[in-house]
Amino acid sequence: MNEKVNLVDLSIIVIYLVGILAIGVLSTRLKRMTSEGYFLAGRGLSWPVVGAALFASNISTIHLVGLAASGYNEGFVWGNFEWLASVSLIMLGLIFAPFYFRSKISTLPEFLEKRYDSRSRTVLAFIAIIGALFVHIGMSLYAGAVVFETFFGINVVTSILVISTVTAIYTVLGGLKAVVVTETVQSAVLILGAILLTGFGLYALSDAGINSITELKANLKPGQLDMLHTNESIKALGGDTGLTWYACFLGYPILGLWYWCSDQTIVQRVLGAKTQKDAQAGAIFAGFLKILPVFILVFPGVIGYVLFKDVIGTNSNMALPVMINQLLPTGLKGLMAATLMAALMSTIAAALNSSATLVAVDIVKRFNPRISDRKQIRIGRYSAVVVMILAMAWSTQGDKFTSIFEAINKIASAIAPPVAVVFLFGVFSKRGTRQAAFVTLIVGLLLGVVAFCVDFEPISGYMYITKGLQIPFMMQAWWLFVICTFIYFTVSYAKPRPDSKVVKKYTWEHPLAVIKGKITELSDVRIFVIVLIVSLVTLYVLFS
Image (cartoon, rainbow, N blue to C red):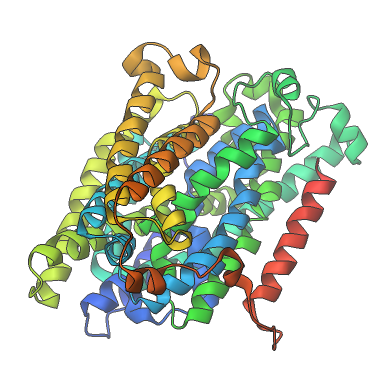
């Protein structure tokens, strides 16, 4: 597998790197940079750009490698992370985006300050930076570097240095505008590359005499094309993920509430929207895009199981590299490499820009409100470089995890529950107090970190929760959410009611208020929500 890079493929890779760098830098060079322009693209993003940027910042090399590996091992069940993300994006568009846009916040921690107090803002900023460093950048860098070493023979450290440098240059110089412009381009490249690989895989199946779903299923493990599994079917697949139907529907919404609705790296695109309608429609558009990965990222892993299980063996992370080497001709390998870089660079760029925003806006400006735009941007740039360096160091620890995709979700399961609680009940509960938010964030984060360490073999020596107590990471997220909910309301009812003016401004009058009002035009975002929900229900019926 460790082959020399073909000159044609190498040329495509270099052209892509130079092209993306040029697009990112030139996208903002003619404009005078202000803090709002740097961190929020001047609040001028249209809904297609918001949606494409949400999709691109989410789909990283982890998804390309990890979902193919998961498709190879357990099949479509991991696609729940993609389709249930569409539900989270509906929540973002209908429930949270209206508050975010109307309050003109620059960061999600700023929203917590408006709803609760400055203490909660500081804690959330810290959690968001940790998430960007350990999840969005660090693990993405490792996944990308391993793949490039596997099928292009490029040293892991070299890959990390080159990709980090190119991405950091246009992100640090151009801010969010440069990030979303390049993400829009990278979304197209990513989808095209994944579709091409899937197409070549289907063609190879035909050559192998497999021309129908029935014939395909005959060559797969039982249930490998099913979205919803029982404990028995998971065991039949030989998996240990705990992704049963109830784990998905109880645990995933917790991760989704954090990741899609309250994580700065993702939601920053919505904050930069031109209008409230663009903010909401962009989120729903991203929800439609999230239907695709099951067919163009998970399904190739299933195809890889049929065609190359003798080559891939038990190392499922090799599913994608093997398919690229075995199926794609010269030139298209280079395009696929560009696809991998598009996924990697868009995620890193998003996380770097959000980290810069969090440090400059939520930390520095809070302690020095009179700081100039120029100094604020400079501090943001410096902090992005520091986060990049720390993430590069952390990325070298990626081989300590057994599964890359599962690793990021285990980290998310530790930090998501308290954040999900304070945001969800912050907009729906008129009783939630500032003391409750602060205590929930602190105690919930500590509980999550302890649970992660106890369950992480390199630290504890044994997975005491997953294997000892038989509670997989998705259910760990659920039970931590339950505990955090108990803490939130216990503290809330022990304290005086929050300010009625704050409650009126930042909470919904009642749960159904998110969809109230007559639909008077076809462009009403609620029509697209209905279409998306019907599409998801139909797909679940077909694949369950």
